[in-house]
Amino acid sequence: MVAPSGPIPPDDFAKGAAVLSARYQLRYDPASLFRATGFTAGPDQVRLAEMLAALNDADARAVIMGRGGYGLLRILAGLQPELLLRAGKAIVGFSDGTLLLAQAARAGLAAIHGPVVRQLGRLDKQDHDALFAALEQPDARRLCAGLQGLVKGRAQGPLLGGNLEVFSRMFGTPYLPDLGGAILFFEEVGERPYRLDRLLTQMELAGVFRAAAGVVTGEFIGCDEPAASKLASPTANEVLRERLGRLSIPVALGAPIGHGRHNLALPYGTRVELDADAGTLDALEGAVA
Image (cartoon, rainbow, N blue to C red; front, side):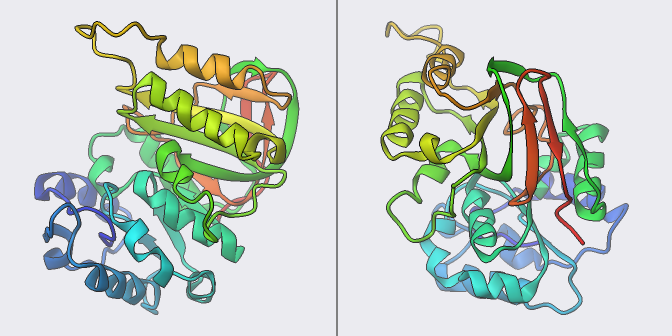
């Protein structure tokens, strides 16, 4: 367990570690997980060194982020795809971890978009089991059902995406994975509707949706304008429906993924099938061998 982004509150860590330690043997350094330097868990060079040490740990089978927050962008240049591929470990994270998962995808290494340690203690058994399945099962399986079809159709492709704001920060850099034929998924927290509109419009202008084969949205938590606000605004859901409903590729809404009460673990970079008519997302292969 590592903290390449923000520091982890000890109480949240203890609850999440209890979930993991009931099934796995944990390796971590409390001094690095709880250390705070500004808004990150230590200086850039220290966090990078700790991340590389975890990846190169011969006894570790997986590397799980303790928390999202912010900080990975500042050390991204040191996490080259060949290093991740050589390590060959299952990497688990989300939110700020979107950047790390994307680099794994660039390397051709499957990863897992799933709960960080801080979040695990707040999630229920269904989410815990989904994470265990992602870490342990190589087989094809149903990831989620009950999605709301927005644009009809069915498509297959590698599953890429993550946090919408963080993902957008890779545009114009060499760190963005190849989006050709991808099924993209996005979640967000705390971004107001006009900012979501701006992000999605930027992606459209950048040709992202022309390259992709389909789109799935997760939860958008705290993204509506506050009730006391006098700003006339559509809701986050209305923005998603208006911006994505115009696309010519399959689109489905409502996956239990993100910063809310659920965060279903998904294989990242592996092939999936999105059926917007049936409201399903299926893994055609697992993230582990």
